[in-house]
Amino acid sequence: MNANLDVVPMQEWINTDGKPLIIAGPCSAETEEQVLETANRIKAEGYAHIMRAGVWKPRTRPGSFEGMGEAALPWLVEAKKQTGLPLAVEVATPEHIELALKYGVDVLWVGARTTVNPFNVQEIADALKGVDIPVLVKNPVNPDLALWVGAFERLQGAGIKKLGAIHRGFSNAQETKYRNSPMWQMAVEMKRLFPQLPIIGDPSHMAGKRALLMELSQRILDLNYDGMIIETHRRPDEAWSDASQQLTPEALGEMLRELEVRKANYGVEFTDELAALRAKIDNIDRELMEVLAARMAVVEKLGEYKRDNNVAVLQLDRWKQVHTDRAKQASGLGLYPEFVEELFKLVHLESIRKQTEVMHTIAQ
Ligand code: PEP
Ligand code: MN
Image 1 (cartoon, rainbow, N blue to C red):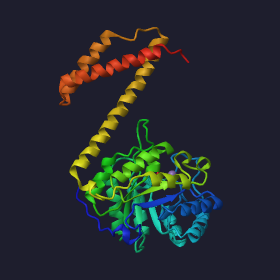
Image 2 (image 1 turned 120 degrees about the horizontal axis):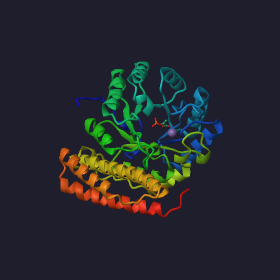
Image 3 (image 1 turned 90 degrees about the vertical axis):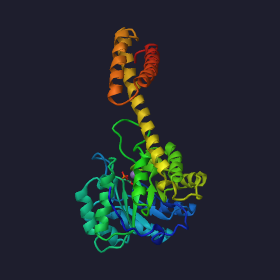
Image 4 (image 1 turned 180 degrees about the vertical axis):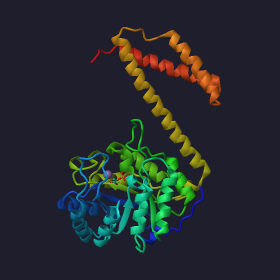
């Protein structure tokens, strides 16, 4: 891909003393008390450089909380007054931009569901012509690098130079461990294309649940990202959106203190070919395991069917057919047939084990 961006270094619009940028705040601004209490508790912890809050919430399905809209902006202004923390808000339309600017929001971000739509992004870019404000762009929900790059090009076309990328992961067709799979190589590619473009990890939206935040955040730091945006709420379980992935401001402080920041080779790994290839392999291996897990889930259903209909687990004819079919497919894919044969022997053994286990459980 041929692309070029003229980017103002991040430290010129937010001073983090060389440390990773931390943007913290609730998924959504809900009430004045919630915003102010969360903001003050974040401030007291001392880790945040910017406070985030969603005011207009793009929800996958209607009926969920869609944000307080303009009513929430004065609460954010008050939070900034009390804490001194600059504000970051998601904008999706020219109207959002007009309101955010009117209330003095400091940093804007474009959400993953907006980045996917070039019409939307162009409207946003047009509304920002002549405005000097940092704009962070989340990756599109689908793993399409050109779409992400295109959003930056549209903003750059409008004269925006204070730019940053937010890597929040990509939605999955299959159930996986993550709400949005990181697919690290996408971010690595982004950094290779635009080494000067800051990249910020969003472990909250990758994880979808608190238990995964630590490992994802460490991975983000290991890859020398320029910062993280993490959701935090005064009472996470009561949050009106994304309750299961938010942490209290204090729990976030504790997590951040436990993380290791790798200063020595800051920014180096992204330009390293070996690291890029390894990131690709890590991701492919993860996908391999997800596909294996999906296969085992079907095998389990098969086991239930056999159990309920009194069919023996091992069907030799079927196994022979699988065997020859897979070997044929292997050579079509340029894979060594003996390798695939061995691999499927193992897969089959595991399938038999799984079905035998199901046989011995009682039908629900
Ligand atoms: C958010 O940051 O709250 C949000 C809506 O994220 P995303 O656009 O990544 O889904
Ligand atoms: Mn959220």
